[in-house]
Every structure is written in C-alpha cells, then in structure tokens.
Length: 384
View 1 (cartoon, one colour):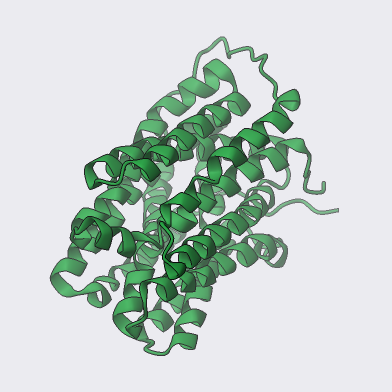
View 2 (view 1 turned 120 degrees about the vertical axis):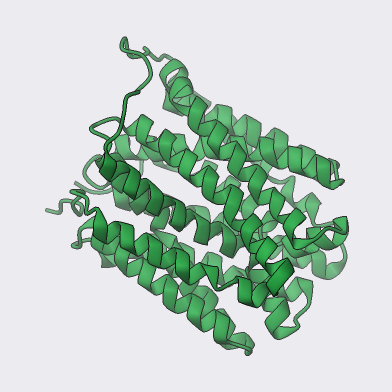
C-alpha cells in the first residue's frame, strides 16, 4: 500500500513545519538569547526545562483531549497554544516572562506533535514509519527556514525575535484553508480515554526514548555554543551553521525510510543511532569549519528518524492503545527536554561546553542498549 499523502498528511505536515520553524530559530539562538538576557548557561537551559514541563503536562492532558474532541481538533488546540506562546515570547523579553511564554508554546507543540503521530499512524496503517518520517522531512524545511532567517536577522542587526512571529499568520492561513476538511463531529469512546498499565518492555523502550530526545534537544540548544567555543565564530555564523543539522534531518527523514525500508524498525533505529554517534565524534574533535559542518550533517541524519521509530516502538508495546502510548511518550520527551539542555548547560558552566558535550555519546549508547535489550515486533512496511 503506498504512502497516503492526502489532506490529513498535508495538514499535519504543515502544522509540524510551523512548529519546526519556531524551534529552528529559537533553539540555535540560545547563545544570543543568553547574551541579551545576561544569564548563565544554566539559566538559559531553563528554557529547555520549560519545554519539558510543557510536554509532561501535554502527556497528562493528551488522551483526555483526544477522547473529548478527536485527534484532528486536538492538533488545532495545540496550534492555538503554540501561537499564543510564540507571540508572548516575542513581546515579553525578560527571562522570567520568556520562560512562561515557552511553557505555553511547548504545551502547544507537544499537544500538536502527539496528535500528529496518531493521525498519521491511523491514516497510514501499513506504512506508518515512512509517513511519520516523511511528514517530519517536510517539517525540516521549516526548521532550516527558521534557522536561516534568525541567523540572517542577527547578522544584519534586526531583532531576531520578530522573525518568529511569522508562525501566527501562517497558522491562521492554514486553518482557513483546511477548516472545510476538519472533522469536528467526534463520538467519544464509550469506555473513556485510553488507560491502564503498560508492561516492562514498554518502560524499557520508554527509557530509551528519553535518551533519544535528550540528544536531539541538547544538540538543538548547544551546538551553536560548541561551534563558538571551538571555532571562535560569530553568533550569526554559528547559528547559520546549524542549518547543516536541519538539512541532515530533512534528507534523513525523506530518504531514510526508502533506503532502510526492508529492515525491521529496530534495525533502522540502530543504524541511525550509530550514524549520530559518528557525527558527534567528528563534531567534538573538529576545529575546522567544514569538518564541523560534516559532523553536524551526520548529526542531523542520525536524529532524523529517532522520534518516528521510537514512537512506533512504544505504540508496538502498547497493546493497541496508541493514544496512551503517545501520551506516555510525551512524559518521556518532557523529562528529556526539561533535563538534557539544563544539565548540559550546568556542565558547561563548570567544565566548559566542549567537555560537557561528552554526555552526548553516553546518551546514544544508552538508547542503543535499550533497543538491543527490548526488541520490538514492529516490522518494515509491506510492499507490493
């Protein structure tokens, strides 16, 4: 069965692209934000903590929203929170207020992302990993665009936060064009929201999911700072270099499912984790710009499919309760987002960002270990 790129796919994909645009500008701009707010690496890392707390809150509310309103409407509820938080972040510059704004933004992003995974899984039952991954591949265009725009604005001396406001009119336009296809009639399951206990295999895989998401957000937040430390590059150049990560993620998300399609999901995940490990080693050892860019590109390849494949593993262990599995994955993601950037920032304050970055290969080894310890039964897509 071919991948179904119907209206569900494209609406979800554009929603993801808009959130990625924000994160593509916000994440790499952390060193710039820290300079503007005169904070330490640890305090700047609290923005990641705010995103993590928001994801945890979304994990608790997600099944209830999906049960009450349906997955499609839930994604638009997330979009509303996301746009409100983005606007507050732009107009409220003090660090206490940006932390609150990012909490709101993060709740919207997590609610939207969780709903998007289950929508794509339901829309593409025979090829879910490819659908989720390639939807995120288009979303990577948003990430790259956000990074390029913010890096350019910094370079020309324009307030970089204004570029993030573009997500608000973009979200409104998408809603106006897609509202006719939005299914608002939803009959809640008579048994209530998906609930119940999950077995040991799920929780081992859940722990591996934490490690995967930790590497993604630690990379997003602090790679630009590592480049500035190693290469003595400007804030604008360091931020623009993170485009290499977005490019690797986009290419990996699009071509990865095609190249690896005959492998079981577990084997796919092992391959991309090893790719990321190689990229991190190259990046950490490099003091030359073009070599660092290769390391960042491989990092992007490695990060590209981790979320999709890890999510499918969790749903495979959920005993046909995908909404519950994704809600629990949001708790894992929230834990990772809350702690990884903050912990790396704390290490950076005490040891320097270069030594602190050594936590990245440790996280990858943990993720690989969980995949080996708890193999899933999720098979590659069926082909004709």
